[in-house]
Length: 119
Image 1 (spheres, helix red, strand yellow):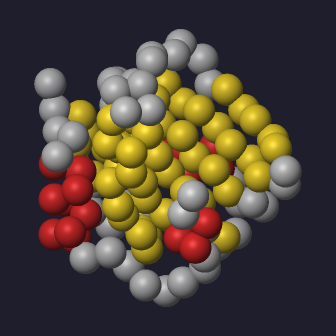
Image 2 (tube, helix red, strand yellow):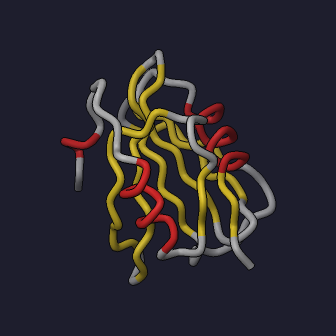
Image 3 (cartoon, one colour):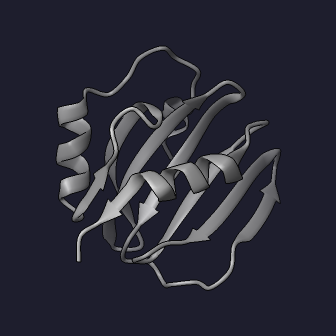
């Protein structure tokens, strides 16, 4: 629904704005690990979830952090309509990365390792 967010850009979200969004879900992100150009709360299956767009050398990747989603034990890879998607188990719920021609699994793993989940 937010396809306009998945664009290549040099813009970055201010650190304070990103921190405020993530803090609502008890999350923190180590600064400087990823270049995030978009950060908004999005309604996903009845809950709000942080929606980020990470800029990579191979194009933008959407990252949805779904701390209220069902837990998983294995990584799921999906390819639909030219988009690659990966669903990765997280300490709470899952993390989803979606992109076209980008290393979505690498971005997902980087995001997962950069996120800190509060208890």
